[in-house]
Image (tube, rainbow over all chains, first blue to last red; front, top):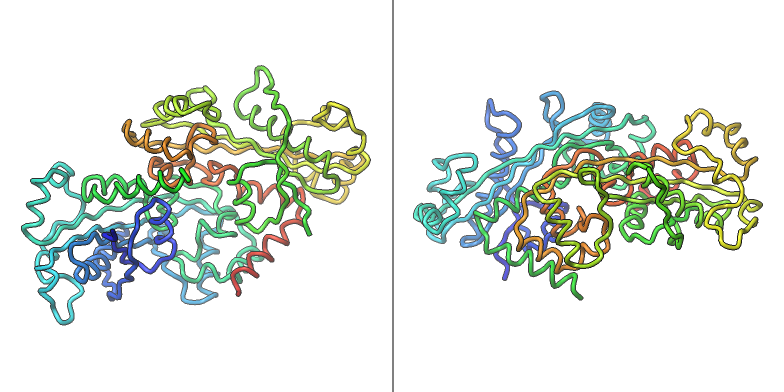
Length: 248
Length: 248
């Protein structure tokens, strides 16, 4: 059974879902990310996650689509992926001997085949429902029961959005250490120009406050809690996979 | 060149050293761990790390031996590896919806061939120097310089001990979740009956404060800082390995 779609090309997110036994198909979103004006960093991460998930979900009705977006925020400024090596150098010089926030927004989206086929020629967003749906996480009581699910399915579109913040403190780094890290190539595809799970990135982070996996790309514990109410059927696979893997 | 010995059979520590490019030989210690009376948890972790490192270092002169010991502490009580499944159940029920501390003690030990061959028939500890050496981390100024190293080499024995503490918060777990986790077998060889890097362990931890890798088994960032002064020559391999791996 392959009922989950990961709307992200990030090899880290793919590996994290595999780690927890969530079998899935990878379908990177091709959406042109539109950053809402006046939004704060958490809203931006959530909105971008939702844009990605909605686009991919439209092509995958009756499946659970997971979108995510991770941003790095230092003193209110968002650090994206580096444009080039000197940009990575600039960012790592800002991060060293300092504490920043990593925010990952996650969107879980489910659409019915009827909604999915109401295609818009250019639309990254399903033609019905998506715009009007409330942002943020509704109380689980409204959604977890069979009754709550029905309400959303009548609209043909169900979405849950949440985010997690982790604080990350870097050690003081020398110019030599930063340049050696950039020479590995690893910073170049990562927001903030580092990966906490890297060979060298792991040596540069002295302390975090929050969920480690949120820094890697998905807040696993929170995702797990949300799936319990949004799509509990997929979690049977998590437990089965864990037990089967370890018992051999 | 294989100049590092890991005096631990933990596959997690082996993987962490590999991750940061520290090539090493694995030689698990067979020492009978003696817990010093009246010691606090950090002292116990350091002492056990030192006992393991000293035993293995004696058989591997002229190499850097790394010993480590990770303990889990909840409300002042040390949780070791579970004796059986019901013991794991007991521990996980204590950890759920609660915050505990994970302390990893690390010992870096170097002995000269002369000291190594002064064998004691039963001794887990080198016959000279080990007992009298100061515990804790001497100021790096005394050790990093070539002069400082000479002082220690005159005794034929050099040792550095340090520890790191990470606070770990578990989500509230159901009986079903705990039993499913134990059924994977994963808790059985781990202090506190969990692994934060597990398929399911990763879903149970909502928040940490400190170094994530310290919970896995080695405080990587602190180890890196200590190696800079204790054995900087081994770090050239870290950087070379990182660059070579990523550039192909």
